[in-house]
Image 1 (tube, rainbow, N blue to C red):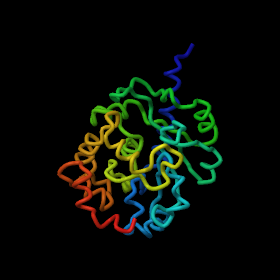
Image 2: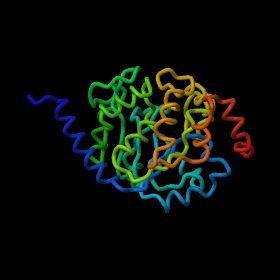
Image 3: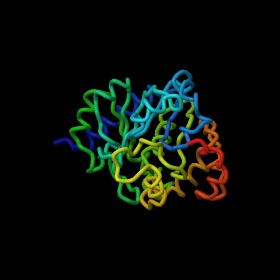
Image 4: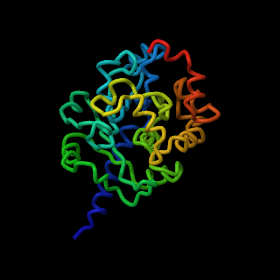
Length: 266
């Protein structure tokens, strides 16, 4: 009998090569859920997102924000990274029709790792509904970040990297010409209002708890970004993220000091 892991690895490797050809040489943008993308300086950026980027990437429950914040974050979506844990606290409900209605070309996820970030194969989290995975694979292009790539990233950050953070490096690995990164604050501010609708905590409280997470260590991911994103010629950072990566320490106090005018009208 053929080993299940061998067949899974072959399928993932093939999908990865197709994904590489889809992204190769493209001008991409990845949009995170940080609240700062809905502040006044970003008003009107949505039109630029829809018109000037070949590939627009959104994360987890990011599709739910489009109707409310289109002038800030646009509406186009080509690639969708989701942890596939269908709970309000995590990736939200996966609705195939909704994904097709948004004209999404690829749905992507990360493999399972232990709490320290160790990956041993391409299997998904036991919290992922395999029926959902089957529906995705049968209706859309489906890509799993290779466990070796995710494992190396996790070693670099000495924890389990967040799905959105991992997506940045997966996109770079798959041949994009350039990658604009926006909406990532390492939880120094709240999630965009509405992103955690239905949860027992509001967006600010949720973000504060994420900031303190030991499983997804934000300081480590921030330090790794300073080393590998800040001076990467393929990476363009928005002005707020640039300020974040130039902070002396990853602290809300210093962030609020540097961005005190940003939230005056939020």
